[in-house]
Amino acid sequence: MKDLLLAGIQPGCTQRTEITVKDVTFGGKEVVLIGGPCAVESYEQVKKAAQVVKRAGGKVLRGGIFKPRSSPYSFQGLGEEGLEYLVRAAKENDLLTVTEALDDESLELIKDKVDIIQIGARNMQNFQLLKRAGKLGNPIILKRGLAATIEEWLLAAEYILAEGNSQVILCERGIRTFETSTRNTLDLSAVGVVKALSHLPIIVDPSHAAGKRHLVPALAKAAIVAGADGLLVEMHPDPDNAQSDGAQSLTSEQFEELGRELREVTKISGRTFSLPGRLTNLQSMREKIDEIDQDIIEFLAERMKVVKQIADEKSLDKIRDVNREREVIQKLVSVAENLECPPELIREIYLRIFDYGVEFQFETKRMKEAKLSVGSY
Ligand code: PEP
Ligand code: MN
Image (cartoon, rainbow, N blue to C red; front, side, top):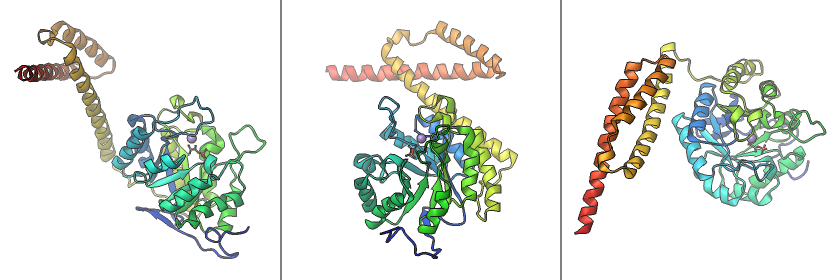
């Protein structure tokens, strides 16, 4: 292997570089779990994912906002809007963030917003992008190209290092072989090969290699035994309806189970992995209640927005529609009964919500009219 001045190590040298991003260290004793959906689809989706990642012991939330899809007709990502959702969900759950930059423009957009920038397999030899990432100095996850040798991959890392950015984390994600039963073939030997040649941390993404969720947990654990410094695993709160890579995304339950298993697997491989402090039953139930309350408020806020829009459509004398209120309450009470939720509670809450909505609409209308009459003087 030639010309690895910065990414390479001398034969026999066991030097390791630890890359610390905020309070998370790659390449140390502790294994780092990164999880999240392939693509950010909505705030709700990435929020649920973040909560699961946190509970499973994950430290970094992933989520693509620009998706390099094989077909131009597939979902291409939410862009800037998705970035906001990712950052917000991670912050609320005390997680770091990683998302992929496809080109200069996306690099520019994400560079000050996320903690780690991913350069994907398809861009591993985009030398212009590598140089830019090198100049920026942000921590980078550099995925191995689908058909790249380890040498080519390390030379791609060298491009980033040569520009003065030493924070490169390598990620093995499977390579294309003659085998068609999996999406790609996970090259776990690459972990050992890289560790013998380079001081850089290396993590493994079993999801894009396997392409099928049932294969992912075993490959993830095998990667840790093989010496990987971390894992990048796709998960989705509703993988069967995911916009991208659903088939390989773990369910929330599977992801949490993987977190528990990693604790055991790291013990036998001389590494560590800690789950968030064990919560008492009461604490964890309270956390659940907090999440539900947050959801209720978000839905109510959404409802208020619509109530406001309706005000514009109604004349002042049509604001209160007692018949409609009665119908809606009847319907909601029967829904509540089916869900074993006390109907009298629903009736009371909705009467209050209607009163507030009507009052709010009157107020909106009055203000509008006051403005109009001021304007006509
Ligand atoms: C991804 O992480 O969602 C992704 C597109 O990965 P890769 O570049 O490895 O295909
Ligand atoms: Mn993906």
